[in-house]
Image 1 (cartoon, rainbow, N blue to C red):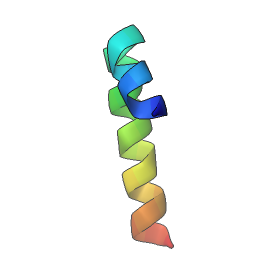
Image 2 (cartoon, rainbow, N blue to C red; image 1 turned 120 degrees about the vertical axis):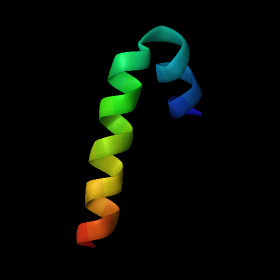
Image 3 (cartoon, rainbow, N blue to C red; image 1 turned 30 degrees about the vertical axis):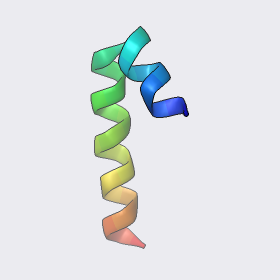
Image 4 (tube, one colour; image 1 turned 90 degrees about the vertical axis):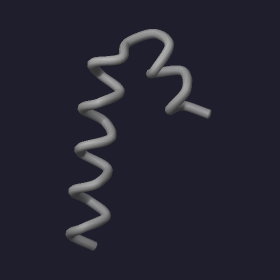
Length: 28
């Protein structure tokens, strides 16, 4: 879905998004 789209368009942004998602998952 969105993740593959980010990986194709903006790899750096995808890495940041993954880090943010991981943080949210760890928090909640």
